[in-house]
Image (cartoon, rainbow, N blue to C red; front, side):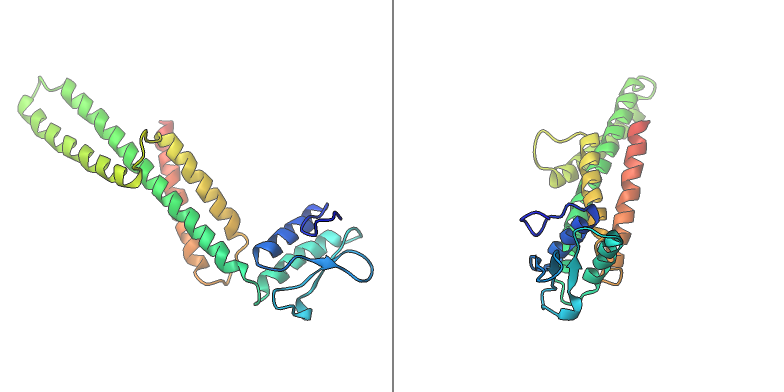
Length: 208
């Protein structure tokens, strides 16, 4: 055990300490007997105390069960902030996915427009009509893209997809730390799955 009570040499106990910190628990204190540390919930409820061991048989199982105790403690303050962070990541991912969808559609529309121009000699009148429709569609898509991504130069579709993937990975990591019965967690998981499916469509389009 190092001098920093938020750090532990054991991976399972480190995850437990990280979770306690995220849920607003105060820094663990040195135990008065038998060594190790003691974690107390924000309300200092003695029934919610957790003994953090340094070594010993079964210590990793104790660390894992302690994480459930932290999540279930009604005095924890971290669940709300974690849900807020998840919502932020999902919102950002949705923005990047929508931008990637728009950019993909715009790129495909531009290709259709280019093919149409090449075939314009065969049917000039029809080409003019289609040209106007496709040009209007491109302008509409580009306008929405500028609202989502006003900066220039604009990221490529692949870069947008990578940014969305990063946000979804962060959201999913935090979803695992939210109690299953927490308010709105079902809505967040549903939103995560929806965005993941949309991102998969973009990746398949990029692979073509």
